[in-house]
Length: 600
Image (tube, rainbow, N blue to C red; front, side):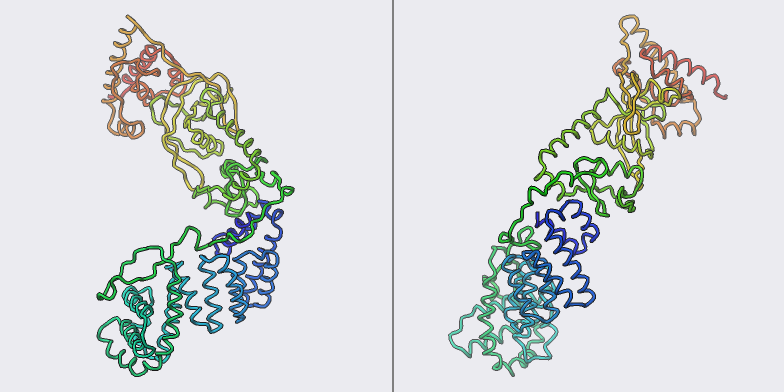
């Protein structure tokens, strides 16, 4: 738990979490109550950072010291103080802090970097090089550390040269220079000399010659080296032992490294491999030796994890950019009405537009670990609510707007908060269905309607949406109700009565006759009118062999009812009929009427 707070503090330091976010986050989690010392240390560190930016290093150092007295095991705090000591040229104290870091987190590059800086300040160049090489091994992409290591190597091998060719100072990240330098350098270190002078000098000369990138530069470099090679023989012999230990101390991970070889001497070379980088090593390292703090049981209270909107335990907690935490469903409902934080009123338009509500893992894990019984009860309540919302016969959500018909598309522009909530719940429960009814002045909505199934939802940045739906089946309203602002109803589904024998034969005859009449009417329409119908409703469905195969009747019939110029009340009366024969007779009368009224 203490390490979790550490991670959030580091995130704030790296500007990945705004300071006010961290403050609200920790306070809302009751961490102030659980870990008062750590929170006080965090605040002192923040004050120290501010003083450091103002170049008040002495005051900043005092703040860091106070913070470490409260939280002595915090490696990020120790690293901050070590860097400050280096800036104040107090290298011995910086080295002391850096050694603590490297002991507790040996795989943390930052610890080795701080140690290298302190050693450089103390003039212990060989040891500093070792730490820089550790940094490169732990984080191969850290180019600035490669440059520091290269600089030290150049100072060690060429202290008397001022006019070294440019190729000698090319960064290690340059592939050509790097692949030439490393094998030759290692070869010179691993060579066991039988004498103290001649072989070492020869090895040094070969090493330096191999650093050149172009053969044309070799003569100039050779002359430069030959004139002063005797000055460096003893110096190189001493450094050879130290560097050999440094490179051999890097553990091999059996990783294969491809070199662009220049000769046979680069083959079968025993080159130390890069260390394996385990997940989290670059940031946390090995903290097994650090003490793990437990939360005092007398300080744990589930009320510290209550949503300020529903006043219940957090369920699927999410944190806004301003740092306040709510249940996911509670926050979504608030944003349906107003794109501002319910507590501080900060504008959340961008947060709403992205629609990336990620759960706050820290809060969720705390609840799971310390309040399992309360969470189980909260989850039970949520599941009961979802089960109730999933019932497609009782308390079915009703969208009061227009006429809808089975098999016919019905696009909707949803902007009212109550319908935003309704559509979202339909998606969350998995039913993806709701009822569509006409408005009624007395009852609120009509007694008959059609169920719609959601095929797709496209959201606008401000929370509005376009919902693509299609009619599924008809229903009759048994009772009217409301839930959270939108209408609901207990319903029963309608199915056509089956015709048999002579009635069936007559039904088929009427069905075929009305279909032909409908095709004739549509064919005679003007082109612009036909284009409008086709764009909105699509082409007319074909005639089915079995008119009674669908409980709601043939699809072409509902398409025709939707495109005919009829009032909604007339369409509603036909929708309520459970006899296909009666509906066919009714639509035939309408076709005869519109055909007579059509201008010739």
